[in-house]
Image (cartoon, rainbow, N blue to C red; front, side):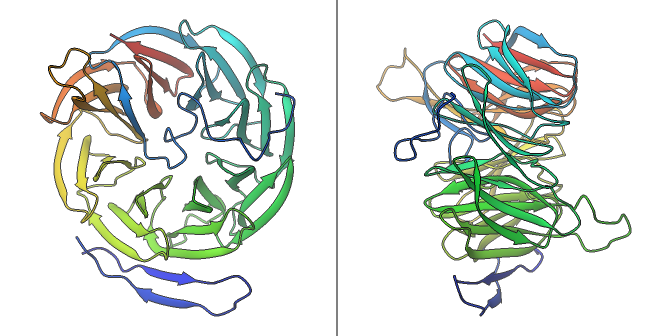
Length: 407
């Protein structure tokens, strides 16, 4: 049985709240806000604004991997990437690097603070990145600073973007966190929460969804590790609902088909109604599902610490199969539908799941046969999900290196 979950909801200007228990069912210029969109080859943590980790109609992503190049840096702790047509952007230590996608040469680099956030987000020609002092906007072509917003405690999780507003969760600690919306380099709104550390944000259809993580200011003796998922308006930060009662860190939410999917360190994967915050289902796995879920056409894929990729029915949460990739999976997955140019009939697709492990492997799973069809070892734990575009797979390792893999 899954642990009981409670949902609270408060409308704007209303002090009333309802709580219930849900049942288990299984550029140097500022942006033009009217036209800017999350756009790039892989512009955000989970590829798209919904953070589903899914790429459709990729002509020939590699299903047999070899290392093509490695870009070495002097820093550890490499974050996930954002990818433009010719450039891949990584936070490495306290710097943001722009690397050439084909050969790994450094196009530019800039210091963002004493540490940088989990991942930048690319919107048109502007990069938004969290850092130890807040959020910065940078020209993606040159690395020049556009604006900075100072935030106490800084920002660890990846930002989200919606209609000109950049949304982040703060890292203040000691029960003093906030979800913050910024426009044109100024704080526009703030929603305060009673937890100090928030994960990456996802913004869809006027709502931002943010999970919480173990409070950096919480004492080691504290027993309560209750975490939550918050939904707030991207327009003014007003609360739409709060889903609480889960234990352990909450992943970056994936949002699609009216549901919010999160994995938690309490060994559960959750589906939440995006409109009202009610639990749809909670599925218990044998061990902690620590990677952000990927959601594709009615299937939820998630990696776990037991070295398996699990596939679950998105409607019911029922596990359908699992594949052993040989090592624990900490971060997200990439799911790609490969179009076979030589297929005998039009539209034939082969689905591939790319997973990085903490023992330094990148594995490719073919979902049709549920087999691992390729594995490459990179010598250090994989940091962040793999990023798959234009026949290349971009991955980072926590020894400070960025790698590109291909056929």
